[in-house]
Image (cartoon, rainbow, N blue to C red):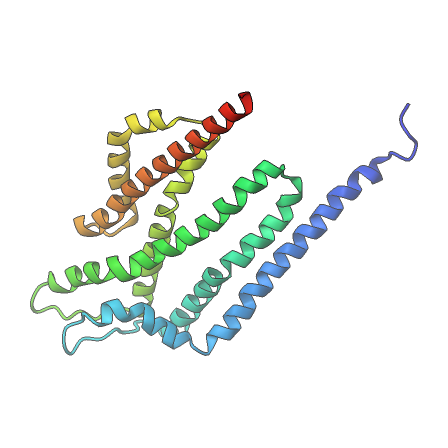
Length: 255
């Protein structure tokens, strides 16, 4: 017989508590982004100049960046500063997400999730840094030197911002490949041997993704596709190491 006190209200109480906690975590994440944004806004123009430096350093003499829209001188730095605030706040935002879901995880899941979250953040930052320091100089040098002689390069600041943000995101996500590969192996969805046999398809897929996410030139496509494939190999390596560790642990338990 069911307890008279076990009514719908008692079943709804945990759900309401979870929703309240979720709202609290979301508000903390939003507040963190806003605080960082307000702290960075005074340097909005400096941040934009820093991001634009790879192109500005290669512009021909007499060329400069321009604003073709009335509000672009304000909106472009504003948009970039907001993106930078989100970028900086990612560890704290993920911490709030982790604090919300962690109570429902087993100990072995927690032990696996913490390094995966930390490495995901670091790899995304590494991808963005690789794009800025390695890809942008080569890419913009190619663009600024291959145009017709009588064409003056004067890039719109808003168009440039959209272009580099797309590349930042593309390279940041591409650097997450080792995590995705490792998770596929660790979850049992596939094996190292199966993924190793698919190398030709992976190489082709990397260049297709590079073609879709980067400008239509071989240099930028290769600069994304080649690191993607190398990171895929890194994921396979970690998958092999995790499998060997698991096998050794099982042998130890059996003995």
